[in-house]
Amino acid sequence: MNETLAALSERFIRSRDAVKDVLRWENHLIYPICANIFCARGATPDAARLEAARTCLKEKTGVFSNFRGSVSAPAICLLSLAPDPAARMARVTEIYAVLKEYFMGAQYLALAALILSELQPEGSVGETAARARVLYERMKKEHPLLTSAEDTVFAMLCARSEKSDDALLEEMEICYRALKTRFSSGNSVQSATHVLALAPGAPQEKTAKMLALYDAIRAHGGKYGKYHELAVLAALSVLGVSPETAAEEIVGVSEWLRGQKGYGVLGIDARTRAMHAAMLVADCYAPAASEAGVAAQAAQQTAAVAMIAAQQAAMVAVISASAAASSASH
Image: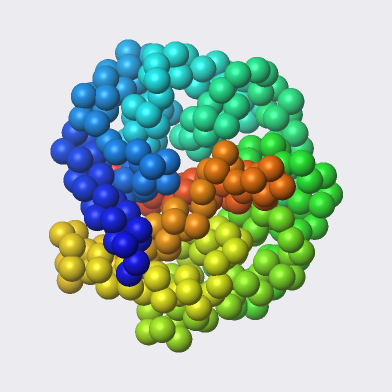
């Protein structure tokens, strides 16, 4: 690993442990996702700010609120990064109320409200929500058995795209057909196509780069999942780094993680570990748009949104797994 990636990987583990120290009793898979919320933003979790954000969340939501449960830990982490957590939570609540005019209330909708509060801190979100509903209905018409509440998050991100609805949906379908030749999980492939559609470039080229990256990881002796992990791989593949370089770095970070607490024989499995490694490699290649030149800013902003979509895909997977586990226990 290069020095930058090594430092980021160490910060990832420290961030995971810092979040776990404050937010106990969460699903163990949510802590790495929370850690990456900080790593992707070049920040470090602060115990006092996490506590304050948790208090704010509890004061502003009820026991049965959709902001509790699996969404609460990511929500607290995002709130802790805001200059004024109470003001951010007020904005989130305002956005959530608007979204509920178009979608059924759910944890995924709460997650969408959190994302929009970061991407669109001011102004009306009504237009975005209305367009998201149209996109969602068209997604559901195209793939009725695959499209469900979790896709509201991606519909909301797509609704902020400068591409037309027709262009977005056409790209998704082209990408879906190409990826389905290699991966069997329709839900996971659909999530990956949402990420790819948000990025610039021809859909055929984007799917080819993603598949080349997947194959390069295998060629380097790594294991990468074929399910919820695909969305993160899709995001990394559109960031401009060569498949060979990215694959080598993913395998290197994954091997390093294998020696860390929680990633051993009885810890997180190899495929999920590789996804966490891919998230860290993507963090290294996705600088903020403000750091780019004027000509590159649009592409950087689009890539940043693609990365946000991938992060949400990882969160959605954990929320879904938690919900399934909860249902099985009753």
